[in-house]
Length: 214
Ligand SMILES: Cc1cc2nc3c(=O)[nH]c(=O)nc-3n(C[C@H](O)[C@H](O)[C@H](O)COP(=O)(O)O)c2cc1C
Image 1 (cartoon, helix red, strand yellow):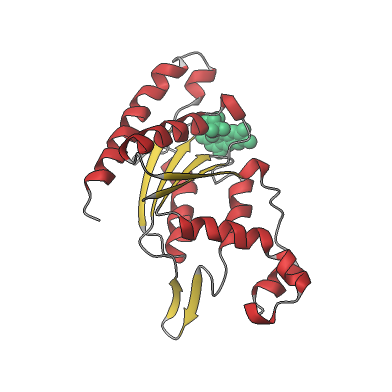
Image 2 (cartoon, rainbow, N blue to C red):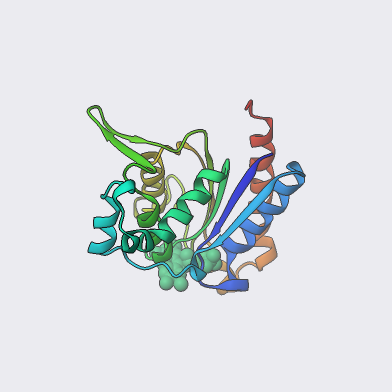
C-alpha cells in the first residue's frame, strides 16, 4: 500500500490556486492508488514556530540523552518527520511569496531538517537519510518564471526546494508551475481556463509516476 503526504502552505484557503491544484493531484492519485493512504498536513494550522536556542540544543543532543523538556520541544518536529518517513510520495502546494517559499513552509523545513534524523554528517560530507521518496511541488505565482522569461532569475522557489530536499535525500522531484496567476485578478483569464492546463499536467504527472518501474 502506498502513502501520499499532502502538504499545503497557502494562507488563502478556498481562493488558493496551489490548494486547488494539490486537491486535484490527491484526487488523481487516489484513483490510481485505490488502496493508498493520504496523510494531510496544513502548514497554516500547524502552530509552526521559528526554531530557537532551546530547539537547536535539543536537536543536537543524542536522542537517548533527551530530558523530558527536550522531548517536548522536539515533539512537533518528531511528528512532522514521522509523516515524511511514513509516506512514499509527497505533494506540496507552494504559493510563491516574495520570490521564495511562504514562511510557513520555511518553518516546516527548519523543523524537519534534523541531524541524525533526515540527514547525517560523515567524513565524506552530509548525506540525506530519506530514501526512495518522490516529491511533486505545485507552485503558484503571480508572474511567470519559466526558462527564458525575463523574471527567470528571480525564482528562488525551485532552486531552494531542490537543494533543501536533496540535502535530506529526496532527489526524485517534479515541479508543476502554475505561473501567471495575476492574469486571473486582472480579469485577463478566468480561473477555470487558467487552471485547465495545470490540471492536465497534474494528470499526466500522476500517470507518468504510475508507469515508472518501482
Ligand atoms: C504575500 C504575497 C507575496 C507574493 N509574492 C509574489 C512574488 O514574489 N512573485 C510572484 O510572481 N507572485 C507573488 N505573489 C502572488 C502569488 O504567488 C499568487 O497569488 C499565487 O496564486 C499564490 O498562490 P495561492 O493562490 O496558492 O495562495 C505574492 C502573493 C502574496 C499574497
